Length: 155
Image 1 (tube, rainbow, N blue to C red):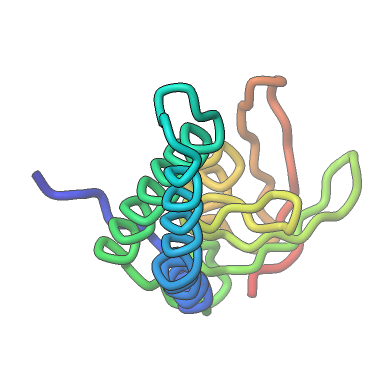
Image 2: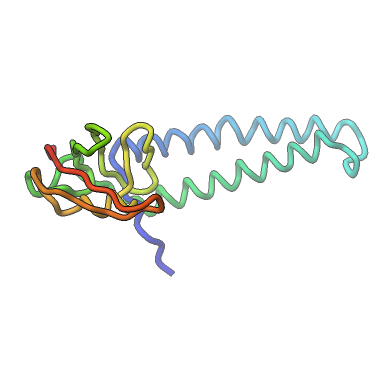
């Protein structure tokens, strides 16, 4: 079964590779040491420190598998829009609405961070913006209702 491509910028891929390196070379050995230390306390059936360390090991190993899968299925996107002036993944879009002006970078879901202005191409707003140009008014529906923005610039 083929995995869905994970759209990433070059920077996003670099960050995932750094996270994987940290997980494998630092976090995994730290957790293994905690487990060894907790085992030294004796009976592991009633050892809360051992149980906690094993739970943490499970989380770390799960994250390692997730990050490895994301890297394996990475599709690096261009930082610049493919067609000049058209919103695509990798584009920076300036929009205005009744709430004010905003600036977003359209990224893959793995890199989305709305608080930093990085919205997913799969989000309602991201999907609505794709393919539009500067000057277009775009409407989209989200759980909170219908909204509109006007695209001021695409870079």
